[in-house]
Amino acid sequence: MCGRTCLTLDPKELECCCKYRKAVDGKPKTPRFRNEYNCGKKYQPSYNVAPTDVTPVLVSALHFDDAADSADRLLVPMMWGMVPRWHKGDFRKHGLTTNNCRLEGLAFSKLYGPPLASGQRCVILSEGFYEWQTVKPLKASERPAFYVHMPQVDEKVKMSDKSTWKVDNGEFRLLRMAGLFDVWNDENGDKLYSYTVITFETSGKFAEVHHRSPAILETEDQVTDWLDHKRVPSARALNMLQPCHNLRWYRISNIVNNSRNKSDQCNKPVEDVKPAAGGSKSTPKSKLMQSWLIVKKRKLDEDEPKEDDADKLAIKSESESEPAEKKPKPEPDAS
Image 1 (cartoon, helix red, strand yellow):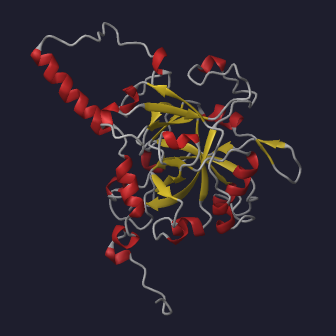
Image 2: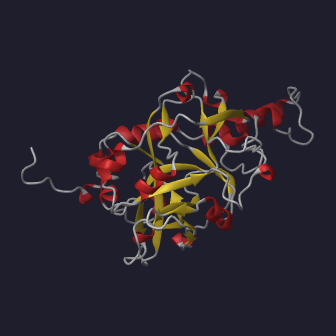
């Protein structure tokens, strides 16, 4: 699954990293960043992006311009965690965990099926994502945390050191995940664009970390086919999603567990994390301090992404997830 990501580049830097070529002329093109109101939610570069945060994603320009070529691309800020189009009231209170959606049965889902059928496919951009090892029976606070990223062409690039990145020339490789987006309208007619990350069963070495992983688009051709919904139908697009075998990851500190911690220490290798000023690894002698730390630790555990919640939602009957008044009636020929 995918519970947290890292994206610290500004819109102009993202445009440089997302240049592409169309098969027609082969000339490099830059996707334009299209700002959206999104009910007042804005994109803020962050070392610890959590669900309900807004990040730019790639979409076909045809979704915003009927005269556009479906192969053209736009960068559009959207909220992580899809808000169902049929939801009424506060968009923060739909009660569903939609950060991730399972590939298995996706096409028949009453929640994710309509966006898929409408060609609302997107590519979620990140420099990397965070994952907690869940394949071993450990308490939430004891689970090792890892930072997962794509290998870079230049071996001198360190993911935890932005001074080694070459963003302007387009050589920096982002981690790109396949997703779906939807559009929700509030009572005033304002739109909120939101997305979900597609996941499937992990295979290969990454299975030692987690049993689910996001659908990563490794090549430019995969990105092109996923976005161009006019040329590539949904069934074909889903079938092309395959496990990524070129991932890299390293152990990081559990300071990333707290979604409010946006420090640049979040994605650093655990051995490079700087201790807090005046910090000490010794057990505090004060009973009051010990009690405070216990309470603080509990809060950190609660802030860690709940993998089980996303999994339960994915296997839960869609008819139970959708409000009764919005359940579609069965077709006449349905058994």
